[in-house]
Image 1: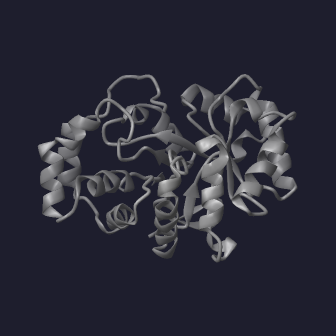
Image 2: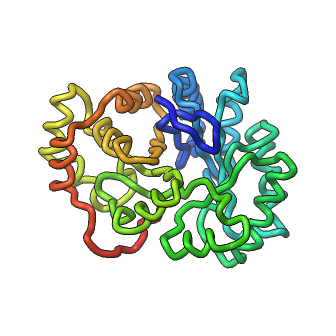
Image 3: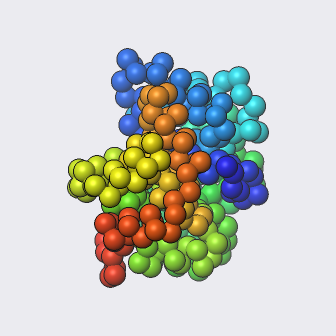
Length: 281
């Protein structure tokens, strides 16, 4: 199952790398998981200069050896304090070196900092013109941030906003997600399996979620991913260091939840009817 990002075909689900490359004993398993994903058609891999102090990018670089670069879609992120003219070009160069690639398909501002958005946008456009990145976007931007971004020259060249989004964290559905849909902007959902957030135990103990999972002979994690895959313009990017879990996650691509099942999930984990603080990890 494919979608497009800036005209390039990408898998409807990606692979995240947050909290990977932090334990040398898991390194071989993490490479195996990422490669299994690639060989299963999951060609979008998300990382960041922040993750494991750059070691997650090295992990991705080691994992993609032997694959055709044009068949992959690599995403990385720049720290907010590096997102200005003084540091962003060196940050991008370092990410490319660690990833062992000549370009990024997508470069994200990890979250908003003190550097003016206009300066960051100008730098992103310069990186594009030099061929170091194909496209750029943002992460952890709320509605006001997005409106401001799109009002700036070349701000409309932003192709995505990466956000924490899962069945138990639906605050963005009140206003941010509808706005993104109105401008046809893809939403990359991190922590789609509730790896972070106080609702994790409540989700995992849900009888409704468990019963739907049983009806498909699968796990509740697969149903959580299927829930996000049912949403327009959403690309979940689950992270796993185990091949077994990666193969389980992929099953979500073959499940289409019914209207009745989605209604049950809406009732069990309703989206808020008012503005809430943006969830960020």
